[in-house]
Structures are given as structure tokens and as C-alpha cells.
Length: 114
Image 1: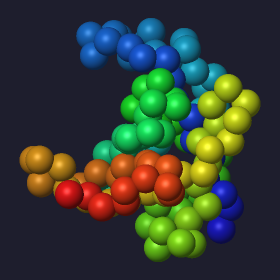
Image 2: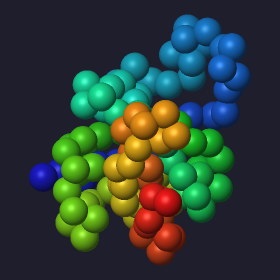
Image 3: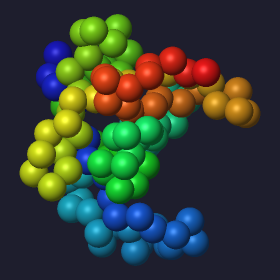
């Protein structure tokens, strides 16, 4: 299975138009949230990984989205920020509305979903 590589966009207002966001990203880059919506889940960069990224919306660069469903010790996920690759893990949990979401965190962080 191919390594999943993600990055993030610049922070933007929830009132921004989707056209404004599209001009920021090359067309070959797809939002990871769109890929995961087919699974009925959303995704966010969380914790210290969010601090490194500067924003919490993950964007797929390339790789296999199936990485998020592997056991943590088998996942091969990296976040590329400013030319530096940070290893991440994906944790599936239910948010406060009981909706499934994936959290991308550094493997050195608390990996519980409580």
C-alpha cells in the first residue's frame, strides 16, 4: 500500500467561496475530506500536528487513503509542511455529534480519543 502524503491549505474563513479556495490549490490536489466523505467521515489535523501545519484541514497530495483504516502501527502517513515530512497517525473516533471523524496526530502524542 502506497504511503499517504498530506499537507494543508492556508487558514480561510468559513465564509470564503469555494472558488477562492480552488485558486489556492493546484487542480491535481484533492481535499482529503472529500475522499473520506465517501466513507461517511470527516478528517482534521489535530494537536501538535495542527500547530506544525498552521491549520486543521488536511489535503491529500498522493498515496492510498486506505492507510487511515490500518492499525496505527502499520500506518504510513506523512504530512509535508515547508519541505519537512512529519510522520502522522490517523485515529477514528466519533465527535460530539456522534459523527465519525479521523484525527491526524503525531505518533508521540496522546492517541486516545477521550
